[in-house]
Length: 291
Image (cartoon, rainbow, N blue to C red):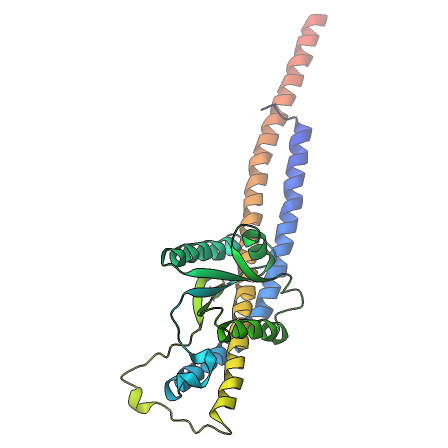
């Protein structure tokens, strides 16, 4: 490696300082977006959990043949909904989801199951597209205008139709979920089929429902809401976790830039001392030559 001049080192330090300013600004932007996303997430989780609880209770009280979305079949074909971000610079945020997806695909294939992918986010599309995976549908730039139920209702209708037409026997969603501001986790949830969780200790206290106007109409509406809102929650969870991950990644990058600036400043000072020493020696030698 060629020895750098003090001018080159100075330019390098300035370049790192410019990068540090960018990462610091990106951290501030992500922190502001995170606060806003957390408010949306706090409003989303209770409704999602209560809706799942209601569907779970209803599934134990009604004939599962009353609606095709309640039917349980042997899992031969699986739809895997992969939720990533549209952008990078968020540490291992996207790679964690991709790694989990690849691991699960391998396991399903070993069990003789066929896996179809439904991709949310540019990073998922870029990784899985044109690599031999069976991609049913793909959606990019989905966070540009914020997460909304209009989008999830359109995708939810496609997923429901595939399940009703028996093109798939199970639907899973994989996404990152925020645990704390400094921590997130990759989770897999089963969207379909809905398999009731029976607590034997509470079975005598289970709520009994009088369904009006008809069981079929109520189930139709509730199941539509269930699909749409579980997809919506997955996107909100992912978006919130993304902001947290990017904030942490940019914070680490800012600190690393600071350390790099310190190291290069030491190198610059040494190079400058060497240059001054060399100039002094040249002056002394010149003076001695004149004498």
